[in-house]
Length: 257
Image (cartoon, rainbow, N blue to C red; front, side, top):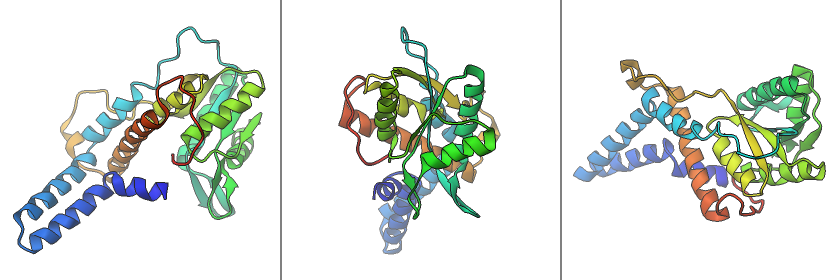
């Protein structure tokens, strides 16, 4: 239900539905319907441009590099699950998760710190994403995982259950591996629990830092997806802030990413 509501309430699907509604009104002779359809089409095209999608991603990534001042050095690495895919032999990690695993494995080799992977059941088989992540790290990168957190259904539960496992091991600070656009929301979820994280962004720089070019105004389908991710993150941060309060306010695990 959460994923359905997210899709309906955020562009581009929201704009597509608005455009359809406007088209129906225009077909019945309403001038407002034509204007609504035109605005919805224009909004969808703008979100598909590198200029807009890059700006939205950059607005999130700017908050993904600041390490907490005065905190203890990280003693573990937390890799957050992202997506899953269906392979020839059943469920496996998706492209986003694989990028995070690659970054986590590289960070592990540089630091020697133990790894925690977190992600709950996915697909009809209800296989924990964390188990798929641990298998991929072992088979694809030759890295073994210390902790597997298999219950988390969303970012809040990634933080709650992951922090609990690390605290049981006497660890109070960790590197946090995720995409740059996702790290601000994830770091805030850990901060609400009083657990210090040091951001380790994956593929930082999705938002353009150079001067805009004419080609940045040409719509592309992949940039429409980038805009959706960014808008989803801003909406998620707003919901988390309203529901859980600011950093340091204890978050309660719950449903919804």
